[in-house]
Image (cartoon, helix red, strand yellow):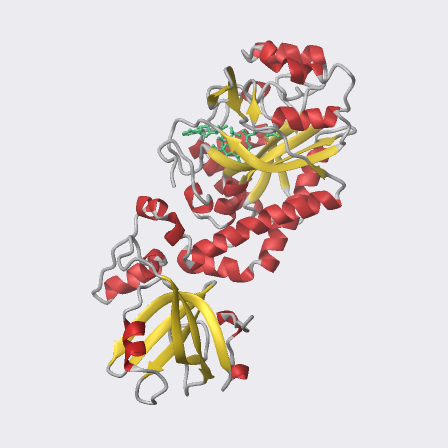
Length: 465
Ligand code: ATP
Ligand code: AMO
């Protein structure tokens, strides 16, 4: 095979050498006997020059280059040169003197959105306005309808690299803590979480559901003596309303583990796990975070080596001190949660914290009531910037109590019989949690909308592309 050079590898050390690169036509300009072709590969760009004057290329080749459609895939053969002075507008500080250009795959001439438009930041809009110019904004529907193009922007490339790192760090940390990765079924005979937000389907004549979480089967993994289990997989929720943080399909990072004495053992683990993830992102994804920041500026996440833990009641008190009176036995609404996030930030200087000991009635049926006061539960939620990223709890492992709680929650226990039966052969006390991957990335980077961190989002109004 021929030797290929990546655009990112093009530097002054290659001066005078012949290179072969493949990338997209990022921009083309022609001017008399010259053509300027900017080639982009994995977010890196290089300017390539074609000049008829020096007789290296033909007039036909010059014409061919100057009419290349943006986003087409091209192979460029040429020689690396170092122009005097700085090169503006490209990432690489060298140029390629073109010998030949091949078009490997042609893009349509008219694009539903251009990458320059899609990559603009608020700052770019402000600057343009001051300069008397006005750019059209690329709306979210245009982006999502043409997601493949939209995903090519530097910020989007970075978002999904960050997302990949979050799941990698999650897996890496848990494996090192003796967890095993399992894959639970997504086709279910009954709902996993109860409630209305379940997708139903026909399973060869039998009514079935898409899993709303791996809850039941990850616990059954504990019943089967796996001790510490995790899963990274799809989660389906038939959400009705259209919000900035709910999807109908998202990626769940779930874990379940034996606990010896207290649900704090799960919180201790998540504390270390998330410090590992955040440290890892800050260390290994510097370039990506910078690229996201360029388009969507955000304050870095403030967190500490030891995560703040407040009880739900302490949360209620904090709100009360700020003049916000809430029902101490009901869940906070989105606005109150956000407000509490601000109060916590002001008082404790952290964007990341745990609220635990929730009232039992607002938690799912499988949640363990507190031994000292059964109006409360051994449960917790975790927040970033006042928005939930994790729910978790110790689970009820006693069959009688589990049946009672399910019934109290209005759930038909026959639909749960396989789950409940698995507790009849003895099970260690256990607890666990579920994380929304898209929410972690959205909130770590303060992106404001979960559609930005979902590759091809599924929401109540969108099932394609
Ligand atoms: P979880 O699934 O763990 O509950 P969540 O972030 O969806 O995660 P909920 O407990 O459903 O949180 O809801 C928390 C608060 O968010 C609710 O009290 C409600 O005010 C608000 N909320 C939840 N779902 C919606 C929705 N679909 N539309 C508008 N607000 C919602
Ligand atoms: P819960 O329902 O809170 O808990 O879900 C866990 C986490 O998943 C994320 N999440 C969502 N993300 C995007 N779109 C949605 N519609 C959506 N709904 C939830 C949130 C949430 O914190 N079985 C329990 C977990 C457990 O106890 O182990 C559960 O599913 O980040």
